[in-house]
Image (tube, rainbow, N blue to C red):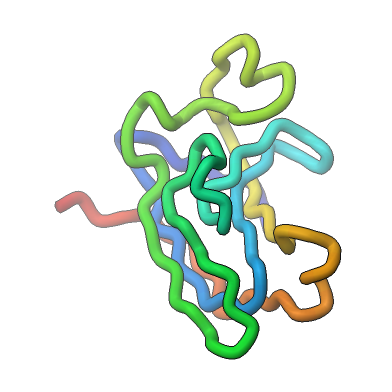
Amino acid sequence: LHAFTCTVSFPCKVSMWVLGAPWQGFAEGFPGSHIWTAAGDKDERGLHKRVPVSTDRWTRVEYVFPRQQSEFTWEEGSKARSGLKINKVRVMLESKEEKHCQDTYFDDIRVTRARSE
């Protein structure tokens, strides 16, 4: 997947089906600065959508990124410390913990341009 840009002026709509202990976010590269936007940890900085752990039922996740200017900075890494804005990003998928890797799944992942309401 190629890098793409999501901005406050032109936000992206993210949607997917998840099972297990999924974390989804955006990264500049691998490895690189990143932000977790859909995760199971309510204390995660940059969180847009809390996703509960569920090993027996698929969950639909949908949200708009970014929602506001203050959220549109890197969460981790040297760029976060300097307050640099996110530029081109790639989708990042991960399990919350290693013990959940074998039972965490993502399906029908879509990142599209969000319609202005």
